[in-house]
Image: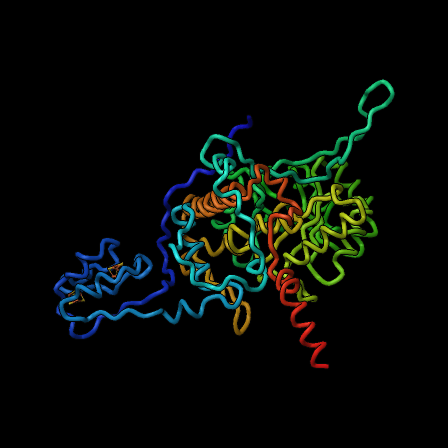
Length: 465
Ligand code: SF4
Ligand code: SF4
């Protein structure tokens, strides 16, 4: 049995100003009796350091919403309300509660518990319109999570053989392709290099090494301070820059090249140039846009072994308007129809915001995912979708020690790994590789809606004509 993959988590608070969901205001009738400081076991209320006769502003990030201070204040001086700053976070895709969930997971590495009695909607756009079949939840495969059976989250990057050929003497004649093993179906993807300070870059690279995965980093940002971890860095470059970055390619196990028409036309010679430098596998990174199915088939025919399909930060193709889950499904099915699915690995990226999105993307046909924005949110970034995309890194982020930032990302990945295991166990799937295209384990709301109610409304429409 292979050694169990484990991500070491460690509680790691971030000593920066974060936005809390609620705010508590203290009225002028407060008599500074200090009772709230005693009843709040989470230490959200404390006496002021400047003047211990007074009570400091509540530290709302610590508040667990238990209402005890409100109930026990002898003067009824405390008023609790939703913080408008929190409500303004994110937008239709990046919902404010996602930030709290990511912050919490980055802090303690544990699976978030939202409590019994889910009262939210049961469907929505993107991955929310997809439900996974958890009917194995009470069956023996669940034991795998807790030790008796092994559930593997490992996946492979690279071309796979779908059959072996032998000659008359029984010797293998099929060419076995190089693959790279990744123990979790996630690679890190630094989303926006201008927001990344040197300490954060070092932390993300160190986190990729710690979880034994990779981070995609623009080649020009691979400075001396991170080059010792080249085995876990995927340098991203344009086709024209391949020879310029020869030294990086020599030390990398995987490289990524941005898609362009020139790349497609000259892929054979570009691939040969890389092969002359190192045995590194090559990812072609292509934006998710309409007609991508055709372009991925062309890439397979040109000999590309790994493709990263990159949607925008909300998981949308641009232009085109489909969600990444639908784009991946369409590409996967097209490759199956063309009988070339095993000749390429697909990395889904853009809009991967929660642990459940990882197995869902795989069920839609991806081999693995690339995660970007949640890494910055784990470090306190605030993201706004409206009126336009804006990412604000917290003040003082450039002074956060690398070890702290690294551990928060490791914690987040640890929490996601635990949730992926839970989902796989509940689905009765023991190998993440088998999630790929396993749509029998999912229900797509749009499809059942059409199946069940479509006919009904069709009949009504026909009757009204
Ligand atoms: S318990 Fe009420 S009155 Fe006493 S310090 Fe707290 S807010 Fe003020
Ligand atoms: S609501 Fe509960 S957790 Fe929040 S500040 Fe009051 S006592 Fe503390």
